[in-house]
Length: 198
Image 1 (tube, one colour):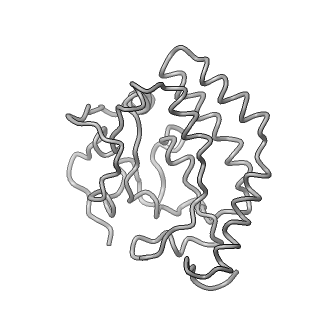
Image 2 (cartoon, one colour):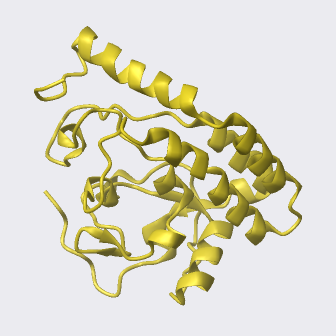
């Protein structure tokens, strides 16, 4: 559908809902169930993170042709990205980047980070793509292009809502670990403050 996204347009809302429904219909539920069950049974918290990452692969496969997300599109790399301490520990180990444990944890996204690039963003590419947070693996815009994702856009982004994985994450990591949440920038602060994106 051509033209800019208008969340008030019922026809456009119907298009994005149909895309999201198609994605969920294309999802390999048997593979998802196997991977999330494996994550749930894994006793090692760091290994749980790896299994939850793997559980997002069926979703990635199901989104092909139905989302705006493309290589070199980094609009969502300058918004809050919440993650658990356990996931941050895995990323630190995989990337060799020093981990900072925040003084406070919060599950509420820090809107002050909107417009602040991810500390791992390299130009328009994710510098840790294979180790990227689970939240990033689940962020998909179901519009035909990235126009509503731009930071200068005041529109609501039509996102796929992957509640299945959010529940799996909490069940797998447990309530205690699930409560140790902060933004990626809190765990990996940049050496110097990056320029804000308008």
